[in-house]
Image (cartoon, rainbow, N blue to C red):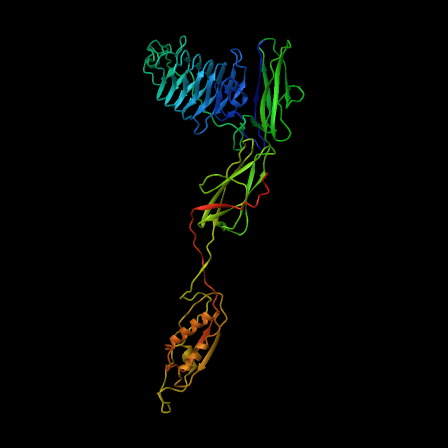
Length: 563
């Protein structure tokens, strides 16, 4: 008697997986999850890795590709089948966004497309030299071309489908294919005919394709399907086509036998002993590939052929942290670094199977494979560092981003004319007022002048900084008629500057205030009050502008997380 065992999966809420595997429902069938496009060339490529879930390729037991959501960005095709004669069926799949065709048959016979939803593609279905195929109970929606029959495609049957909002719903220039069966054709959203007898079929054919039984209502509804899969980023299907599971993913086996009935199901894990199935199977052990073989036995002892399903066990979704070396400085604005600062990406968790890779980029640059710590060069300013890791199973960590500020500019210093709080000024007094008397010396100058006259004179500030420098004060009395050598003495009283250059500058300023020009015979005041100063630098904060950057890798250093 005919019998079949099929496997089913369901995800439970755990720390790693927090969403059910089932993400949508098409025609009552719960689909497994997303996968990459399917390419099959020749009958030998109807394999599990190409999305085949069961079957042997015969009329009674066709290969079955079912339950997949195939909607990758920028892919040319969803399902591409080339030069096959085996019997197969594409069933309960969702295919969207293909740049050329959702389903492409090239020189294909004995294929069936059933309960499939194709949307948003340039062409929904393209037949090239294809014959004896069938398209039924499917939805073709919002495509530039719905179904195209080209290059000797003939004797194909298209019935019971819904064509919704397409540019050109279908194209069959030679009319070598059948667009209705019995009393049922297809639903065309652009059909303009009437149904006067209310039998649900248009009174006039859909002339572009000779559909003599156009339906007045859509026989199949367009189903909105949410993404399926676990909560962490990545694809439920590994690169080799295996299904990715954890040790908390129950695997169930379901058998049907329309004859005497099912007696039992046997299964084996990785070539181990055959065990009678009593409940959900959990895969244990190290991360890596697993194979579950199974078969059913009916009450008469008839056993079906053994079948095998491939899994990839991954209990360690990748986790990565970014570590910033020295020099660095953190404040309320973020973390500041220089072009000498090394940035390390360290994986704190990764699968024990295969090689886990880490990727990073700076700002909107291209993704780079991480191998050793890197540095950020280029203009000063903010940088956005993004990174993530990917296990060999295809499980991908969610992208993380960190912002750092690069600052290679040294501080800049300059003098200040205004006095800052807490600063000390260096100034030179103006000449004191003189008073002539009967006993005055030649030249009419007073031999003595009160020191208070200098102390109340106007001061010319040189610089002002904080903290205060060490200062000294002195009062020098000069006899009347002092020669140019006296000016040298007045200038030398300014010694105490931090450097010889500072002392020279202050001496020059003092000389200018006294009316000295560097020559001889200048007249000097009778009293000078000065303050000498040790002056630290004035720090001017540097201003940075964001700009382009280059990641420089320290090739000699390998992170501890590298495997």
